[in-house]
Length: 476
Image: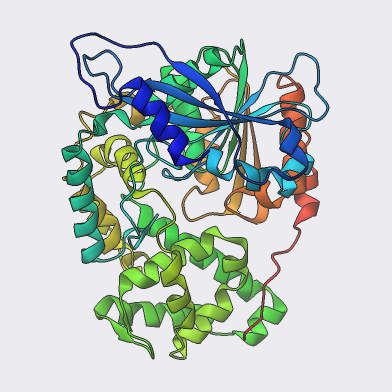
C-alpha cells in the first residue's frame, strides 16, 4: 500500500466530514500491491477497507485499512483463509506482508494450502489516520526517559486535537474491523493466527465478534487477564535469570563467565542508585531495562546476553549504545490507545514497584510506571471490564509458548489454555518469543493443526529441535 492511495480513498469517503447521519457501510476497494512479494507476487492481491472510525455515532470520520491477500500455492479444498494478527500493539502486518512472504514462514506455513490475509490494524502501519509519535525512546518496558514520556503525552493531545477519536482504536474495534473485512472479502469462515499481542487481539475477536471463526493459533500468548506493568519488571528479571542460569549450567559458558550473574546483579544495584558513566554518555536504569527486555525477547540477544552483560560489568556499554537506535519499534499512538484502555486501567500503579530486593526487576520500575502518567493524556474512553477478564472458548485453539520470554512467559499460556475446552498447549524449550518465526517444527505443527483443528497435534519435534540453548560468544 502507499499513502497517496489511502489519502485519495479517504477523501472520497469524507474522512473529516461530520453529519447527523449514522454509520456508512464498509467499503472495500482494490488497489495495486506495492512491495516485493518474491515468489508469491503473482498470488498477492491488495485493497483498502474503509470503515467508520466511530461506529454507531453521528460522525462520518472514516479509517482506511490496507489489506493484502496472498492466495494459497496449493489450495486445500474446504480450508478457510487465515487472518494474520499483528503484535505490539503498534506493529504492522500489511506493510510487512512482502517481507513475510519472502521469509521461511512462507515456505512452511504462509499461503501453502490456505489463503492468508494481512491488514494494518487501525492506527498502525500505512493505515489512515496513522497514530504515530515519531521516534520515541520506548519499548515494552515503557517510555525509557522522562522526555519520552512528555513527548508521548503531547502526541496524544495532538491526535485528539486533530479530531481523532482515540476511544476507537482498540481490540473491540479491531474485532469489528475483522468481521467487516471477512464479509467484504466474501468469507464464510476464517482462521486466526496471532503472535505476541496479536494473540490478545485474537482472544478479543473471540470475545467481541467471534462470527465465522473456525480455529485459532496463539504464538507466544498474552491473555487478557495478564498484567503488563504490574509484575512486568519481575518478568524481565525472571527471563534474565533464566538465561544466566542456562549459562551456569553450560560448561563452556560457565568457564567463560563464572560470575556473570552475581556481577551483573551488583551492576544493577549501581544503576538503580543513579546513571552510570560510559564512554559515549551516562546510561540510566531505564536504558538498561529497555535493553534487557529486548535482549531476552530475541534469539540472538538472549544467546549473546552473557557476553553483553560481562562487558557491561567491565565498563563497556557498547551494547547499550547500539540498542538506543532500536528503541522505537512501534507506532506509538496505536500502542498506547490499546494499552491505556485494555491494560493499565485494570492494574495497580503502586504495585509496579513491588519488586522486593530484586535489583534487576527494579531497573524497569520507572519506565513501567511512566506508562500510567502518559495514559493520562490519551483520551481512550471508558475501559471495558471484559478486556481484563479471563477468556474462555470452545473454538479449537493451539497455544505455543516459548520457554524464554520476558513479555509472554509460558506460565500465562498454561493458565489460559485451561479455559479453552478444545485448547492444546506446547512449550518450546530453549526458544525465545515468537516461536513460529524461528522454529520449523512449530510451523509444521501450526499447518497440521489448521488442516484439521479437531485432531491432536504432534509436538514431539519441539523437544528434539532445540535440546540445548546455544550461546553466542562473538565479540567476547
